[in-house]
Each structure stands twice: as structure tokens, then as C-alpha cells.
Image (cartoon, rainbow, N blue to C red; front, top):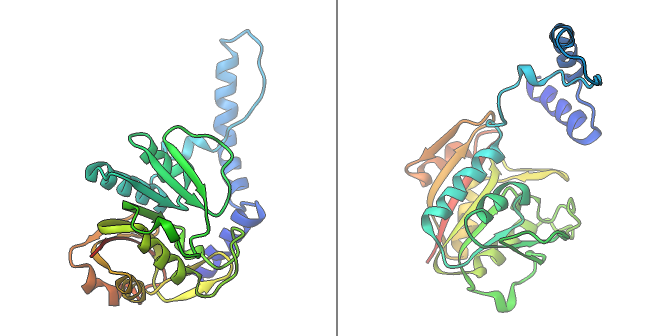
Length: 258
């Protein structure tokens, strides 16, 4: 029941634009708003416009429980420490992870959707990574794809519908890497299914097996739980069976190409 309610809430707020909890949070903020307004007006004589912001008082100072927050921070720090020669990103958030990395080094971005803004530190190429990469084979020593591969082939972002899209995408990405190159990949993992056309949830055992076909070998695994809990798996291969039985967590995989 709880999972069904959460899914319904996500649909209302994320896709329809109606947050059923927002009116309740607004009402809760009204008494404090009127109290503070009376106190402020008592000592202020300039122009005054009513423009309520009623929910911030009860919020934390920032969003730190999102899986995007944690994956972007953790992988950006790994790239900073590794200092690769050439780093390419596939489809990660421009206003999150990519901006993190561009703050301290050059980064190249491949995405099926256009980006019309010229951004310092970011070189953009429009590309469909479900297609073979051709002359770009073995062109970089560092690669990332965060919260993007699970969308390949579902048509959500204008990509061709292809039930094997994520497998083709993974193989193409592997071809971009040089020998001993490092690949940072995050995808939802758990009981395998497609939630059309939002995303896939991938069995981590299948993902690791597909990666091995492209000479990618798992060296580290970080799990980001709903609500922001983060755990490192010291022996990542041992954890895969248990992770495959969960409903949903975000797996941040580090692969090395042999």
C-alpha cells in the first residue's frame, strides 16, 4: 500500500504538476507568516509588497537526500582524485554532475538531446549511443553515465524505441574506453523490470555480466538508498544476489576495462 501511494504521489507531483501535500505545508506556514509580517511592518515605512514564501521555514538548508545529489558528488570527487587525461560523459545531468566536473576540468558530453547554451569547460556532441561509435573507439581513459542508461530505448528522450537499447548503449560506451580506462556508471537496480516509459530497473548480476562481455570488470560498487543513505560494498560481487532481490536502489558501479 505504501509503495502504491508513493507511486501515485510521484505521478501527481512529477508528471501532472500537482503536489497534494503542498497546500498542507502552505497552511502550516500561514500563522508564522502573519506574525512575522506584523512585527516587520511595525518597524518599516517603505514600499511593501505581499509575496508569501510559506514552506521554507520547515525545510532543511538544502536537498541532500536525493540520489542525484549523492551520485553527482561522489563520482565528481573520484574524477578529481583520478585526474584522467580525457573524460567523456554520456547523458548525465548538465545542471548537476556535469557542472560539478566542469568546475575543475574540461569535460566532453554526448547526449541525444541538443544543448543550445555554450558552457565554459563543456564540449557538447549530439549523439545516439545506441549506435556504434565508429572512429571514437578507445578515445578516452575516463567515462561516466549517471542515471541515463536505464532510459535507453524507451523513447522518453526522443531516442528510438528498442527493447535492447540499454544493452547496445552499454556496449557502445565500453568501446569508447581505452585499456585500463575507468567507467563510472549509475543505474537503478533491483528486481528487473521496465516501468514504461520512465526507466528500467536492472538486475545487477545481468549488468555485470553484460559489462564483462565488453571487457569491463567491476572494481567498486556504491549503493544509494531511497532517502539518501550511502553504503560502499567492499566485495561488490558478493552483494549482487541480495541487491537483485530489492525493489529499488541506485547502484554506482566503477568498472575498469581490461
